[in-house]
Image (cartoon, rainbow, N blue to C red; front, top):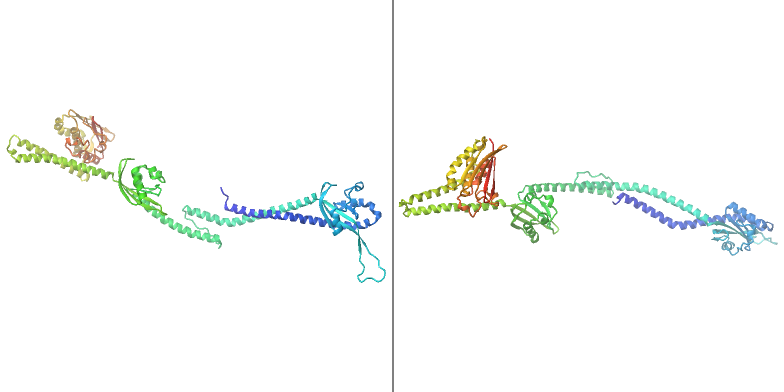
Length: 608
């Protein structure tokens, strides 16, 4: 995690101060060392000069020379330095660090650099290693002079008299460099303490300055966070006229404009979402890479998948609908509208009308907006209509052809033939009844679907209605050699139904059970209560219904097993009428079948 702006700014302050102090120390330390050494040399020279003045009369008296060893020792103890007394010819006659016996073995010091410099310029200094003390030393030497005043005979010169100086020797003082270094280290420690104090002061100043600078920044950062999250917020009041004040005012104006634009976009998005959600057509939007951007509720229902599961994924990856993907890819590549009808098979078989339109998303990014209209039912109705027209045409054509043929035969003279004329008329009458039944069924179903039927609900005994229908159908059953049996519990409860409509339901079901049965087959009708409902079952041992036809047997005008459907008269309207009438009774009807073994239809009605 990166440090905050305040910490980085504080660190920058301290870094600048530390670097400044470092460079100051690096550049000043040698200079200060030289100044410090110069001050020590001057101090040593001043003290040596005072000692030399005190030593001059002692060194001038020949009687006192024998005591100069002791005098050098006293000077050394008083000053704390090494004191060496050197005669003008370079002979060492006194040293605070050597005994009188050791002085006899000391080398002549006349050629020492500090001695030569003292004799020539009045002060000499040198730094070198002392073999006597085995350490580096700072040497400062001054000459020891004796003043002499000459006497003149005769008149005095206009220039007056001049004092003469006689060099008696050299006084040298020495200080170990260890002491110099110690004092220099103390000075450097003081410098470091001063630097540390300066850093502390700089830190305090930096913290105060950074706080004053970063506080407005923190307020502005918090403001941007609230604006980014869409919260309604007040702009911090920064009265300063500097950049922060201007920035705060700019943020305020920006926040107002953003809030206004976000409000407009939110309202437009809400309206657009409401419109797209209310559409019965599925709507899908793809970007230029074929990734799904939008998936409305109608599309979710079409494909049986949630929008959250496919957003951001490519269409083929998310839905795996190759026919639809081909249409969308073609619109995306060719960049022109495409309208096409496709079939999909998952989650269920559907027929879709697809309208794919290229949409420009800006910056040369073109996506696709597709509207999907489910026309499955429309196509089914068209198929049913075609089948109905074909069936009705056949059903009308067959009896009309027969009627026309028999009428022409009768008109040609057969009407006078007593052996055939009556049979011809009976055939014409039978076909006329079939045409009437067909027309009645069509009109009946149309009336039921238009909900123009009046129902009179009352408690009805199912067994009484069933027995009446069985009795009416006995002649047809005998002709087909089909036996009918009924099984009822002793106390069969009544149902809430319209008696005539219930009779129509049972008539259509029993009529089909007999017509589509085989010679010697059986039809069984039974009923039993289940809770608040009565289940009526009609079972036959006929040809059965194929699995592909079973889901559609209750559709209007639909007839299964088309290869043999025309062998048995009918329009395919009976079961559609049964379904509508049963639902009008608040009941249900279902079908089960095993091809070649028979079918079972079950009607469930509410008890009275």
